[in-house]
Length: 122
Image (cartoon, rainbow, N blue to C red; front, side):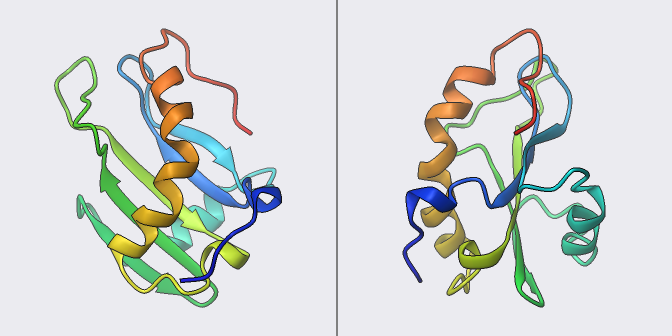
């Protein structure tokens, strides 16, 4: 797995939900509208709660919140990522992807998941 430098820390799409706010893009990977890229990357994954799938130069990852957090209805919170560019290089498994991306967003999610309003997309 290739090391990603800090100046590349926004080059992935991250969609999730919080305790009281619904599913949304928290990071847009530098795209104005990441929906098309997200849908293409996740097209073969369906509703699987954990997945890692490569499509061309992109990697789709989905995994439940590592801290076991749930939303207000008691549903486990999923984290969906589309890794782009250097983020996708060398990711061959779900474990690789989690090891690469979760440390980059864990503190941020700690701050936002319990907010009443969703955070602005980046």
